[in-house]
Image (cartoon, rainbow, N blue to C red):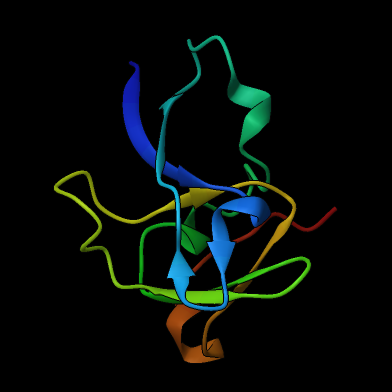
Length: 94
């Protein structure tokens, strides 16, 4: 199944928030699955969070960017959320 999701990279975030919002095909059968990192932690994407650009700038993602939900991002964006926001998440131990 292929979804079109809102996406930001580090260069798309400024001191005043999101300056450019892109849309990316997302799902196992897409052409660009490697554009989205952290595939083992989908819990980072489906809830409210603070996103910080690698070289400065930040924005709050509350899922209201458009009707498609929360933002996806690549490795150049740091995701910050309270620990209790991840409660109930189960991860595999390696």
